[in-house]
Amino acid sequence: MDLDVAQVRAFVRTAEELHFGRAAGTLGISQQALSKRIARLESLLGTELFQRGGNGVRLTEAGQRFLPPARQTVAAADTAVAAAIDKERPLHVDVWGHLYAPMRTLAQVAGRAGELALGHGRDLPSVTTALLNGDIDAAFGRVHPPLPDGLAHRLVRLEPVDAVLSADHPLAAEPALRPGQLRDSTLWAPSALNRLDFLHRFADRFDIQNTATSVNLGPAHFLAEVTADPRRFSLMPADVPLPQVPGLRSLPLVDPTPLYAWSLLWRTGNGHPGLNSLAAACAEEAGRSRWLEYDPTHDWLPEPPTNHPRNGSKQH
Image (cartoon, rainbow, N blue to C red):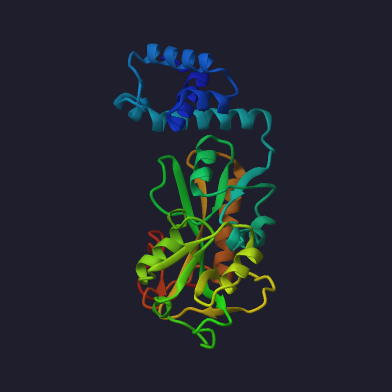
């Protein structure tokens, strides 16, 4: 049985969108053409892949089984085409988590990773969709489970996090803060907290009852909002260059120190040679700059990394 890649691609996009019109739009074809491709694929396989009804489109059990290898089929086809016609193309990498300035870290390894074409994803879900669709090769930002099948990631950097608050905050004169001291303050977030995994888990872990959200218009605007109310605070990686905001204080957090985890994320089966180069450059810099130091007796991570030693000693 020979599969038609165009039909398999139509199935994958529809399975991701669960909407024939939207899937057709992403492929640049009519909804009628999309429906025909999927009908031909179902006829070839001898089984229905979708349940169509008044409540929308859902995958059948056969469709659920078919989706992971179908994604791999489309990815392998894209890799084969790229190898044949454009093997020198740059590695396409998206970054996300822009308030925390992911480019600070990526810029330190980019020169050793070959030619990169950089883009900006909105958040982890949009980036994972772009990876699975083959629109990008890799991504860099904070990864948290669950991830869709077909993706892999590697921890690159664990970065200490500071508290940022107003000079009028009751704790502003302290040399350092324990996270629990912020229990009566208001955690100011640049978006809905359920979309910001790190801040959401921090609030849960350290019993921060008061939270409020804003619109992410960049660091200067966000931090000016933090300083506008002496009850507010937020979290920023310690090495992020802060804009000159009057009345802003940045204090280290200790006992424990929260760590923000940066990871490289990619689609399994992607054969672009630049992917190995980028991963190797990240590992080299992590060793040189001690990016992966983690002591569970003094540090806090929302989820301890599974690919990192957990013996309580600092790693170098």
